[in-house]
Length: 319
Image (tube, rainbow, N blue to C red; front, side, top):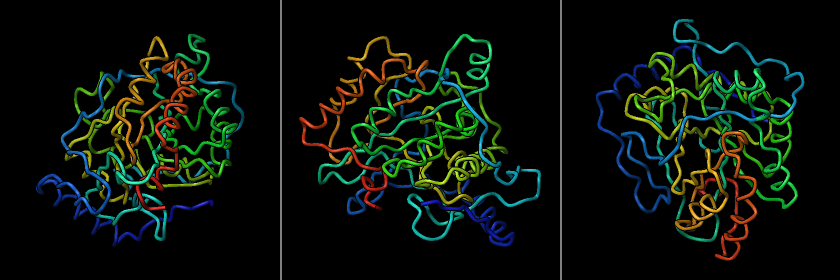
């Protein structure tokens, strides 16, 4: 379903911004009650292990779709993109610090395969220079489509702009959900795996811009957001309060970036997997060259354990 992201009125935005400022002095969010089926991660920062700054991979591209409306910046005086009303997965009340989830309820047999699509300026340079062929691993998408496996893709805005045809393909698949992974994969905290850092005043507009870029492609839109490197703190979470999102970390980190063999990726993906798990993988080919080889073994291992991939919204119990 093509979900358009409406803009909030100016008054509502001012209220949201005021609420966000108040949150800076508030304590970090507590864990959700067990009955909610969603566990909140701590808001103190780096929860991902062994993830290095990433480099892209991508096949040939064509003209992107009609550009979305200009994205507001911190100094533009325009309101940022707010969460749409209705039943968009991941949408939360505007003006409140977003929840941070690691996994869904530990019941049933569903798990979420999530794929990050990173793209930085350095990765773009690697593509232009010919040092890297592609940051879009089509073998992964081919396999998911062939086996009819649901998945959720956390897209950076620059990756979408680099690979519009691949993004259209993802959006056209009813088993795939689209989520937000920032515009240019900049770090939202200090010391986040060597990633360049975004200015605090630019955080809200960066994420809002990415929602606009992704929304232009339709498909199964969400208000899920993942920080680069899974690095976040109170300031980063507060910056997202005007946008009405849910932050998704993950409880199973595959370690696929820059892996030299598929076997460690498979072990990391299966050793700790449980019902409700959110598995973090990458679709960036050159930066995660073993993921397409690991994926068939991961799918087989999940089946042996009686676990079944499902869209993230279903695993989190909201769809």
